[in-house]
Amino acid sequence: VMLAKCMPSYLEYFSVKKMFAAMEQTGETKGTVREIRSAYERRNNIEDVKSVRPEDIEITKEGGETVLTASWSARVPLVYNISACLDFVVTTAK
Image 1 (cartoon, rainbow, N blue to C red):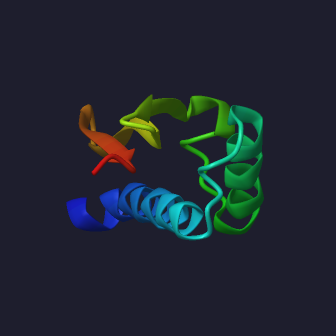
Image 2: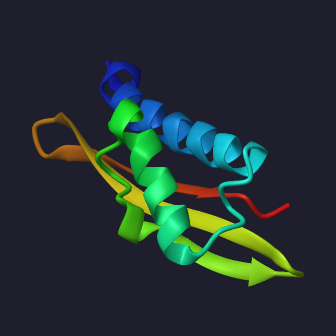
C-alpha cells in the first residue's frame, strides 16, 4: 500500500531526471537562465510534473559548466495521521 501511494512522487522524480538528462544531451543547458527555464517548461508541458516549476530550478556554474538542481519534498498521506515525507534532489552536476 505504501509503495502504491508513493509511486506518483517517484514518477515525478524520474520525469525531472529524464528532462534534465535530455536538456543536457541536446545542449539546452548552455543558454541563458531564461532559455534554460523555457526549455524545461516546454519539456514539462509533456511530462506534466507539478512539483518542480521552471522557477524552482537552481541554475549555477561549476567549472565552466551549467548545473541545474531541483530539490523538493512530497508529503504522502498513508493511513489516519501517518504520512511519509519524501525528499528529492535532481542535479546535472557530475
